[in-house]
Length: 565
Image (cartoon, rainbow, N blue to C red; front, side, top):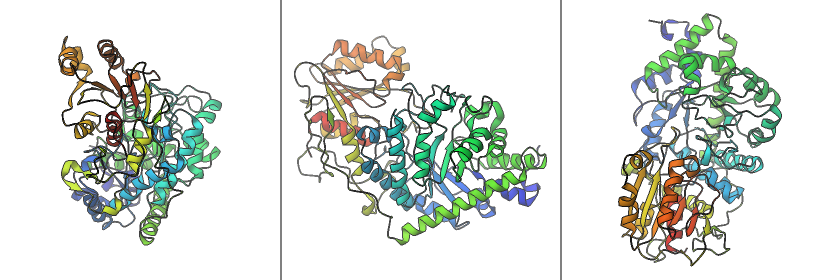
């Protein structure tokens, strides 16, 4: 058995622990985590398994900072499809693609600020967001709606706005995934993606959002587990000095914290192992190693710390490089901690930019609104039919946000504005008459998205029209039954409106084929598209939400029934 880090040089052991960002199990801190924090562990990362409510997370982070006041507490809270705070209920804010579709940088800044207020209240100091990736490949399996869009200029301005908004609430942002994960077709959780563009093409398309992030004051950048042969034909970006040191620090002038994407992801561990990838990442220029999405035990921290110490002792990793990484972690902790305390002292935030237009309706091809005006929310009992978002339920009902000063309608406002409507030929299909039957076609999601997070339109429609019925179908279910579609989708919709909900249909042939079959039988069906839009007008009316978050489903349901603000 290899010697543990605890049997090695205490100085090296401390340096090794300071650059690790592990996750852990449970909603309270295990003894081993608290002990490691007191001994010099520089950071921890929270996942949805650690979260019941904001108040509970605040108690958790306070208990950890009792061991080390300068501890970095990180989370991956993009909102939209990737949420940790609201994984059990669905996010109360839309994701980046919806914000990009609206293209109002003040709105983006306000939404990010709203996220930051919750994170700050929970004691989080670093958020692994926003995604600064330009989703130039519509078939990208891991970015998609997490990107602000497919245009470099749009992604750049919204990346900067998102960072300003989040950091004004006292939480540090982290631009990801450098040098850009948007033009890939492989999910780095499972394999090694590759971007094929020349250095000149990458500089024009993928790098500007990271430059904009730096100019907006970002102090952390997350690396991508991908191969960029234009810069380094051999090493993934996370492990590449050419990309991290020569390009990011040298050419682009970034001098902040460099943190890995989850180091246990297949793109790097399949070739180097989790310990080998950790050593190579730090040697290549990374300052902090994120781990724990899947490998969340104390044994993982032991393995990685031991690997770093051994690498220094055998000359694989210069001690000066490990010390430099540790110093950057320490400097970042001091900066982010000071910012958080300043916001607390200022009474909650540093303020955000101009107000947001809350009156504009959704984008409708015919030029007429379908009644989803963007009021700041409707009080319950007004008879308008709106679904009101007056509280954020956390942890599947185990806790609520009880500080009502933190509850805002900005997420629902943004989701409503992001819905685009296309009308087919013939008579108007909206609003719905009666209670519809809803068919939701559900894909398998990538590991960045918590598979337990609620999504869709059926439940919000049921809230507005209690007689609504629904079924959710998957590819395996349809493949193993010859009459499932007729029995579960078409027959229950006889004499009623049919609503078909798809999610990233362009990436899933089975989903587009199923939708085609349904529309062939029911050309009057209404289609709600909740992923990256395919570009084709579908059904009697086609609603595009630009994401599948909870508020996107609410916004679509309101449109379908003709609710007014």
